[in-house]
Length: 413
Image (cartoon, rainbow, N blue to C red):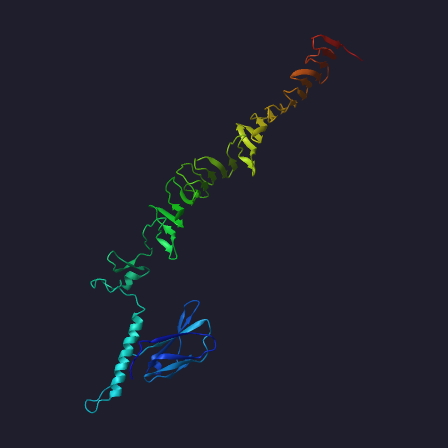
């Protein structure tokens, strides 16, 4: 016979029905055949057993077939290989006629062995043919390879690498760790102690190591700006959100801080509560979506203001003690408005001061006065007397006209 093909393997996909699979290639004995089942989903391989999983027909120098005892399912494939034992068991006689068929079979078997090794070598890692033959292709010893990776030194010689892999630095446009189908998206090393992530060739996130009194931070950047999520300081519980910059204002222990690129703190939260910007009437820090110029702000020490349409409309003033606290209501257009004031805890007078524009004052307590255009119109003491046009009535009823003439009723019963 002749060996006219180099094929030494043949694969078939299972379908749950087919049980006969031609070998295509020639072989001599049923033991020359190896059958490997491969799970399509996982790639797991299982060597099947002769007579238990399959039988073999044909051979003796010709092709044949493998017959499965149970049809392989659609989830697997069967690969049939020719695997000859690497022996030569034919002993030719010293004298006599030349047994041509026997010699030919010996030669055919040798060719099949060569094909068998060629098929295996075709699936092996190999150095290019143009590499120098002086390069060592020997792997490091098993002792050197334990828990390490296969790598290559500066000469291209195999070496055992430490448990961490090394990569080139790369750039945002050409990251060093990528998916081969998306070469401008991945990871790179922009500088020492920094790790970058790039998407579509644009620097998107950076992890930056910190140190003593220096925050370890994560910079997340959009193409038109960025947001930094930053665990600041060296203690637990600190988070800072800020525009990407080079600022030095960081959160301290157990704080949450939000700030702008210009290091302006816009929000702070700690164990004592939540704190915001001072703000102004035009830009109150506590406002509403769609109405940013109406809300609450800090006017000054112990003074809270409320604004509407960017103008102060209400002010609450505290003296710092229990003596005086004022609430001022201001007209938006003029800045004038009423004042309601409990002056003390012992003398609970209340002023409703409608100043300007012809308005007046009403005061309740030990005495009460009504004024018009900032001039007293009527005064009533807690036990009398009463005055009209004067705050110092001398009789039970004292009346003072516009000319300054005083009239009074001394008493009645």
